Image (cartoon, rainbow, N blue to C red; front, side, top):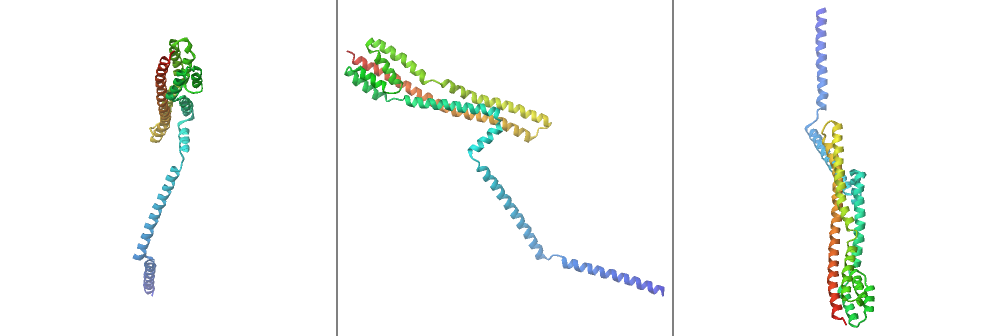
Length: 278
């Protein structure tokens, strides 16, 4: 009897175990995804990846637009701060003072431009009449160095042609010096701007090496950042020098044109006086 009970117990235990195994397999089979569901899930993952990539591209585009949206003034201000106000300020002062002198010279030279041929025709007409006072009045009412030179010559007409020629030559030198006024200062600022820039770069390089020494390693970030800041002063200094140099050469060309007018006009003026000498 005990053997029968033991056998029945073993059979019941094995049966219960098999039932549990079957019941565990059925939910697993029910929960197993079908091929169609797997495909749908894969497609959803691909769509999510595409959407993520599109979102990233949009964010990058927005960042690029934000960078492009910066005005030229804002970019200059940012670079000015990065270069360091201590060395960028002298470069900026060179630009401001140099441009102030350039504008003053350009205005002065443009106002000094005279229609020499028309002036000589008026002087010749008055001299032929013997009306030197009217010729002097014409020169007095005409602006420019050429008219001033002619006035000085006519003012000494009673002293002889030799004294007239000396007066024209002497006052021509005075007028030439006035035309060339402040050019040395402009040339100075042209030389100072890149010099300040190079000095700021050298000091910036020294600071960059100090940062490398403190970090104990040649980090690309430390080196690139220090070099960029150091070179900004040189860039601004060279840009200032180029701008001032262009205007400086324009002023020199304008002065040469006026000096040529003065020389040619003086020769013609003396010829008029000699031809109409009485």
